[in-house]
Length: 256
Length: 276
Ligand code: SF4
Ligand code: FES
Image (cartoon, rainbow over all chains, first blue to last red; front, top):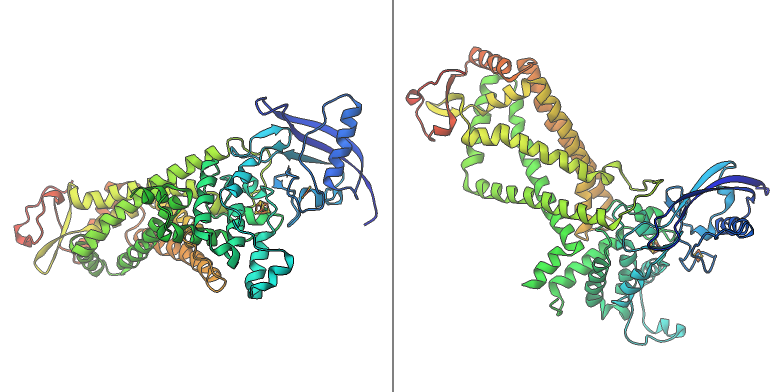
């Protein structure tokens, strides 16, 4: 597709700080190259704002290659935009027809309070990881991976779950702001592998407890999270989390 | 002990309660539908006999009686936990999106709360119309079967379903049942962790199949009654039509106070109260 230069009306959520009352603001942006990524378009818009002496739009970004999970933007009703399996930084302006309105909102969840504009506080995810999303012992270096024979199917499934980048799109997409897909990806990844099995029960119990504590909603199996997940984490991981959690609750040695 | 309560009140635990009560209610619905298909016998006399004898069995056989208490408990628990979950889930998303892409896999999955509320309203109405009348109701028809007196629940059902606007309420509610299960049945399995490459697509198919089965099966009853006894505008009109047709087709007909009717009352012992 040959490069074109498009015009858009950008309707974006502006909120000065966590306590301020936010609202939508409209900006007109011309000359947007169809080869730009979505974040480059925001950069371009911010440059015009800075030149006018206005406060640029605050948004999270880091790798800009689809692996860090920072670029949280709810675009036209979809986290990371309407394309399947991409993050905002991997979304390009060629996906947006010329002369249209693009509405950008922050992730909306009580557990992800807005810090400023499109930046939300996702430290709830960090605390969930801290509650059990790890293996306590050193499991070696890359070359030690083949020390332990693991069937290819299982390794693949664990790898699929491990693809989760902790972006929070699942929470943003869920009508209940549930974090089940994220937690299930972490629990699955480790529960499937021998290195993670030793702590699997405790992990499932603690991570669900922390998830509840953070004020995320409950899963009603609508499937919206998987549909919007940039890494296409599937619903079977949520079932595994339910299984891990329930069997742990019924059979683990921790009475809590 | 406390760990049990903590488990059941966790987010996953509450969902398990929803799943177990919900799936139990589905098994009830299957029995309820199959049993009540007896209403569809084209002959009024044999339909009345079969259905009224069945009603006595369902309300007196100990195992079924015990199950019915479990059933009432499940309905209440399902509704209460749903209410808690809904409030909690609303709290987890305090600010709504301006534009919503609705990525849920079905319309039903997004509207379980509304569908469930319709169903709760329906269950209360349904139990008031039949269950309450059967056990504590006032002046209603009784019929004779082998010299004994039976509450003519068939006539009560026929009367209610002949009133067109009651039937419309029923049909709407049955659509709600269908949509509720379209999502609910498969969701129940997922919550219990029962997701498997070999079975999940079958469960999802069964969920949809059940939804259609319930909509078609249950809707056939009011429709059949309106076909059998004609469409009425109110209960009095319907009661007269049902009485006339029943008597014409050979049903022994008396009116009496159901709340005072002892089981095993001989037909000749019945003191007729005034019909209306
Ligand atoms: S499960 Fe998917 S949507 Fe959720 S945090 Fe991980 S990558 Fe993002
Ligand atoms: S900026 Fe890292 S995934 Fe988008």
